[in-house]
Image (cartoon, rainbow over all chains, first blue to last red; front, side):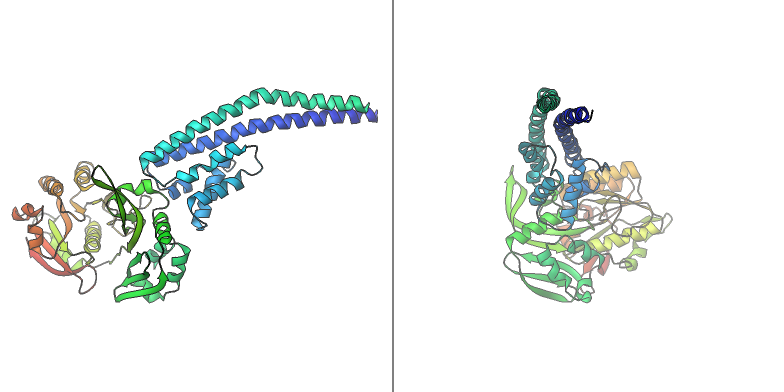
Length: 171
Length: 294
């Protein structure tokens, strides 16, 4: 009886591991969407209202759960504390805020990209840079969705399958 | 001290720390901070010039400008093309460097070589001496059309600001067309200075369009605007006067003749202004030298 319970535990644990792995793929999509949403807000504040960047950073919506908003908060605090130029501050803040998340190296590169152009050109060129970032984010998001669509169910199945296989071997 | 803190917060630590150590009496009388690449920091106070033994580098100048503009070139691109930016509090920062031209006009300044941070000052009461003269009470209460003339640094803006405050507290509807954000120093919908209870400010709006907008939207009794002198300014002034609204404005010059020889000289000939106020620097910013009948 105890052995059967143990084997069931193994199957369920590995199955759960598979589910968690597939959830990471879903979380990556959510993080990219969240970042895109934040960039859209930033874009409209800059292109339409021409608000100075530090004012925009202060006026961010109060969703504390959002990693993108945490990034803005971290950048604002670092700029206020005079911890360097925007490019360095943005990169460091992005790496800290998104540490341990399922974002890929390529995703992180995109997340760090705004630091290289934000506030450093006229309005026209800011708009071009936002356009470029949006296009790249769109591609990245499509890729993330494709990965989730194909690998998500597979990872879930593999988890349970590996659990079942290990149970059979131990039996 | 408050205006100094606003600037100090925006300076790079290397320069800010040097300034922070200065005695309060120097900080209170600061009028300008001049930063030139390869030179010591120079402080212009009401009592003379003081140097700080810190050699300014090109990187520090760039960082200072970035911080003063809050890392937002796009928000200041029009100002920067004219060689200055006005920051929170109405303080003006003059910029020199290599000018990049676009369609034959200055579009940007790069390789910054010097910065001149000029503190906006509020001297309450500096207009009291002229206020009662400009405030006509013959029959109808109405401010007189006035042109303030002085060389740079004599307090034209300071006097205009205090006059606006005085009229506003006397329940005259005041409209300010603040093209450079210096008169009111608007920040997050509030002026940085006391402008009284009856004042409407159109911030960062070009004078020609701004005067029209104020006339149509706010029905002011008097409009204040700073530093006129272009041909199109003359047309805007005429529009204002034709609408029965008083105008109090300023221009660079030493005397009435300088104004008469400028592009708005015809307005003086036509007696569009009732008074010409000449300022001097002898008694500090905003000192009235004489008030002439135009």
